[in-house]
Image (cartoon, rainbow, N blue to C red):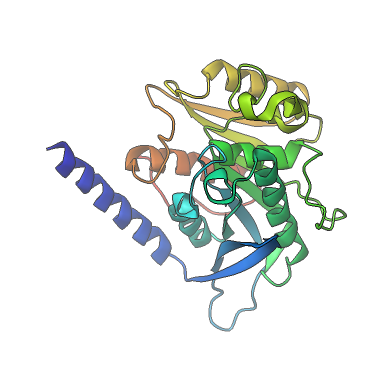
Length: 288
């Protein structure tokens, strides 16, 4: 019975995504944004198609970094989110970055790749019809850490990047992000004393972009107290931080395979982006 119920939910979620994607024409392409050593890293880009006869606009962009503890993961995690926001009028980007299981890489190299991806998009903004001052970074778990760290940390830049181009996003949408990498926080066993320069919580400063955070109250990785403290520090430095807690939910509750909370968090993210001027109109999803 549980299997049938889960299958029904998955089919429902697929139908929901299909409805979103049909609301607006979307073009898709996959390109290499970075080659390092023998590794080529790609990004999958979803772009709204202008109406026939119209000139392409300069769209806001949203960049997604998958979760997986900097060890595993795949861009497919946020593909439904990307298609939804492309249907809402954003260029949506799924970023591949180095992870330990495939590349024997460190979390610091993962962050270098995240920053390289944002710089690549900003430097090619005209080509991809992107407004370079309207780039949102998003991610879940360790991917949320990468998005937040791109906005807050100064170190961990690829030496081949053009550092005159900013890697700092203009807003953040974070799904149970591992924002504390210090002692007692996630990943400290791998980060060590570098947490002082790597951990978003320890690098908050005035000018940190507006942020929305989603977390389940039974998250096994991130204590509720941590995100509440993050919000408190953000507000102290004069930055907006909206926090939404979901009672009884665990790590990864927002993913597409959980249709109810996928929809709830997507709606709140859409409303946040409307309130910050990144989106117009009304969300294409109803809170059910």
